[in-house]
Image (cartoon, rainbow over the protein chains, first blue to last red):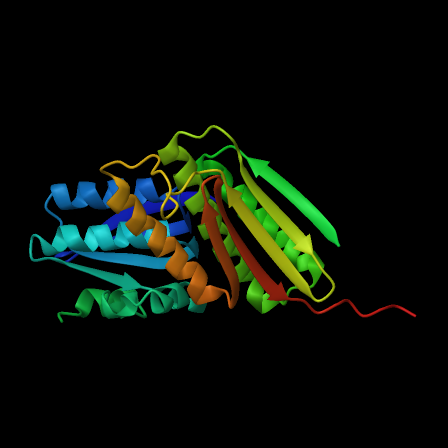
Length: 113
Length: 143
C-alpha cells in the first residue's frame, strides 16, 4: 500500500491524516507535506497515524525533522497513535520522550502542554 | 536447509518488495505470527541501510537478501557491497556527508538491535552484512 495524506484545520491546529506505509520510498512525500505546511504558516501540527500500517526509521526521521521545523516557530507536533506495533518503534528508539503521543485527534487538538 | 535468495537494484521502491517476501517466507518457515511484524520491520531497516550505502557509494550492484530456513530457526542475511574503512587500512569513499549518513545508518541499526536478539553485524573492505535470526516452531507432523 502506498502513502495517503490529507490535511484539515481544527481551530489553530492542522491535522495531517496519514495512511498506508511510511518507509524509505514514501517518507519523502510526508516530509514534503510537513515542510509545505510549516512554510505556509501552520506551526501546530497533529499527525494522525491511526491509518498507518508500517513505519520505519526513515519515517521517524521525517517526524523528528517536522518537530524541529515547528519548534523553530515555537509550534508543536503531536502524534495520534493507538497501534502497539507502531508505538513499539517509538519506544525502542526513545522517541516517546520526544513526541507527545495521544490516543485520539480530539485529545491532541485539545492538548496545550 | 531451504534458502530463498533475493537480489534487487538499490532503489527505495524495492525495499517494500523485500519486506513482503521476507515476511511471507518467515511465515512459511514457522516464525510466530506475533513476531512477523518485527521480521518485516527489521528486514526493511537492513535493506534501507544497504540501499543507502550502495547509493552513497555509487555502487550499481544489487542488494542481496538471503532467507534461510533452518531446523529450529529462521535467518535473514542482508548483504551490501559498500566498502568500509578498515582500521589501519586505506580509507575509501570518505566525504563531507559521512557524518549525516552515519547518523541515518545508526538510527536504522538502533531499531534493528532493539527488535532482534540474535543479531550479527559485520563490515569490511568488500562490504557488510547483517544477519538476524528468529526461533521457529516446526509444523506438527501429520501421522
